[in-house]
Length: 352
Image (cartoon, rainbow, N blue to C red; front, side, top):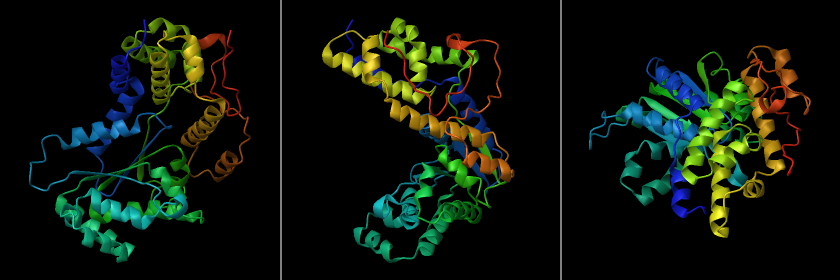
């Protein structure tokens, strides 16, 4: 049976409330309802783990029916930390302007092109004070900053990224806002060295699925949802190990991989098969790079913040050193000892 465009469309729109995602959602939502203004919630996880979709769901839960049309009330404001400076750097001034746009400051609401152009001449401090004033006027309670790991590109000075985090924390405190910082694992190294963040944040991790029996059962359940949409359950279950290794246990990577495979099958008018999976599998170079980022992030999550000696060891860790897993399972998925994937492992499967 050939894969049709409608099947691919359904696959692209499919949202699976899987275990790790639901746990993170419930944990963050509970924190949002209990923490005090000025405090920080940090949501981390590997790339393509579903962090942005998590924000979408949280915003829907927080806003609900609380905003009447025309009142101007904005309980939730969202923005993205983009690299909009010269040579791909993170510009704190551009970020401040983005905050004004996100809170729908009157200058942007009126779409006054001349007034917007004049913002470039204002100081960053003035822009920030304008946001703080607008946030209070709009009744903002929660500020989400997505892709926050981009703050590490603020400049050549290593201390710059830490200063950005401190600045965001102070801004939230002055505005009486609960700050939610969302980013991939590289943000952990920045936050743990930010004086205003350490000890004043709540950490929530939207992690990948590990290589143990319990997680693999959930991973297979997710494949069941995907396979049902494109009519290839048998192929996916037969290649469970390949799909796990080629996605590092990250559901977003599985989804994008299956979309590529389904699209290729449709174009060639062939059945969804093992050969198509192999051809569309992420490259080994990409997987090694992602595995390195994930491994370092998981190490930081499990290391004491104030242990300087351990912090130095994490920085100088050997590329092929394997972290010890805290979860021990008697089961042996794929007929071998369960362990995390090593950074230098050749993430490939025999094409037998």
